[in-house]
Amino acid sequence: MIPSPYNGSFFSKKMLFILFLLFALKTIAQPRIISFAPVAGKVGSVVTITGTNFNTTPANNIVFFGAVKAQVLSATSTTLTVKVPPCATYKPITVETGGFVAASSLYFNVKFDGAPPTFLSNSFGPKISFPLYSNIGFPNPCTGDVEVADLDDDGKPELIGANQDPGRLTVFKNNCQLGNISFNYLFDLPALYNLGRLTSGDIDGDGKPDILGIDDGPLKIYKSSTSYQPFIWGNFGNNPGGATEMSVADFNADGKMDILVIAHESVVVLKSNFNGQDFPAYPVTPEWDDLYTHAKPIDFNNDGLTDIVFSNGYSGEMKIVKNTSTGGNISFAAPVNLVDADESTNRLATDIAVGDLDGDGKQDIVVSWKYYWTGNPMPSLYLNTSVGNTISFAPAIHMTGNLYLPQEKLAIADLDGDGKPDILTNYMRSAAAKNLSTAGNLNFSSFVEWNTSFPQWFLSVVGSDLDGDGKPEYISGGGGVNQIVILQNLIGNVSADCIGANTILGSYIVGNTYQWQINTGVGWTNLVDNAVYTGTTSELLHINNTQASWLNYQYHCIVDGNTGPDIALQFSNTWTGAVNSSWENPGNWSCLTVPDANTNVVINSGTVVLSVSTTIRTLSIAAGVSFTVAPGANLTITN
Image (tube, rainbow, N blue to C red; front, side):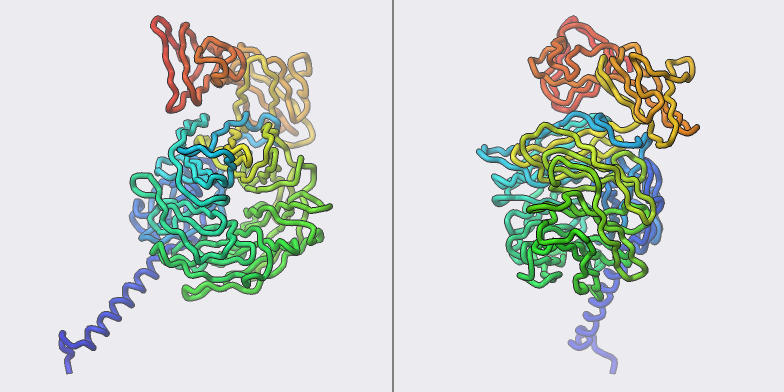
């Protein structure tokens, strides 16, 4: 019998077939990143992403290098060629197509010229701070976490800060230009009291970053709208009570970003269903099993499934759980302890960071500690020794050196552009350790500290390029002072100081013999120690009392017969407006001198009035600055 088109059984079977077909098409459409090459490169270099189920139309693939979107140059179903964007961050590469998101297991590392043998006191500029404030006043503000994400799709990451008290989320618009840090307050978003931890990710598959925050338990998701005014998308009560931290990752390889939540009593994965309401919970640890402080999701054995590392507060242990998810369901193996000879109930993990520290294609682990009585407060390093499908780590080694205080937070970023991610940490001072590792051997320099003159503590640290020069800035959230603090990355091949200042240049190459040379415009000659130059045969050249006439003098160091990069001497002066609005007042400038024809001028904010004609070399002026040239006066810019 031929089934009638009006037969109910026929319609039921047909509908089931259609639903099956739609499900199959959705499953097939999920993109996957298998690898990318190269794993490190400069801004503007081309990277090939290999995977499956990419869209063959380039514009239909949305690719992010961490915080910002990349240009897709060409596309097939299995390869994408993309250009590394300015402001790329040390996070996974993600590809969104057809509403589904794939993330890389490894992170892309942005390189730039001029890696020094060590971090110097002038590797970063003076602190630039932005207060977290609201439309209404609060007596006891306190900054929690800081996140960076490009919310308006202009290629520049915004700053997002959490106000723990009064419980607000503040967004700063990025107005940075190359080499110039500039932000302005954009808006506040409501939260509950004690908004502490932030993260971002594409939760709904629309190719735009959403903001996630935890405030003493409930999880809030702020969904970016087309008008660039995020709104609260979800307020979920099914996550564990006392939640303190969360991360975004796809745990069951279904192309949807799930949420890892850590509470004091349990670690839970909230599975995404794209509907903004239903996030079923999958326990990673038994509830009330122990005290947990921090967790990070990462694929440790490169099998395409996201594993988890987390800290056990009561015992001072670090644990790994292997992802065993299949068929869309989320599951994990039993936790396995990492080995650390210093493990004890005397310590509490204060943060966890992950990255491929030795360049072997596997993600390693860094943990910072707080000790209650005695112990080594230096961070622990865990080398990933996984082979095949098995996850394994070498016993922990502790970093050497002395820090001002035990450190609260960690971040990983390649601060000096040498292709090796460095470690950032902080508490009451900013600090970083240079990566000296080789494959299979984790090795870091001692920490170099930058005293940011804060009387209070820091509760977060981020390494992210904000001004598009390819160099990650050092970003912190300042606890009781309620500010986001930025140290601009000045590492590279231009030394920019005040005229008359003393400056230090690094050789950028390490060896046994050193000889510094100078080129004043007539060729290279060797330097010798005198009243102006000291350290002419060492890795650090000290230049005393720089003169305006030395503008664009070139320096480099020959190390064991190898010539390091050329370094140009330039001069910079930044407007502070400390006295009034007069350009001609030396007290309004960071160098306490009025800029001249040899000076690069930077004006980040304020009101400036130029009353007397003057000549300067360059001018970088931020949006929102009020700048007036009085009648009869002229400003000449030569470059």
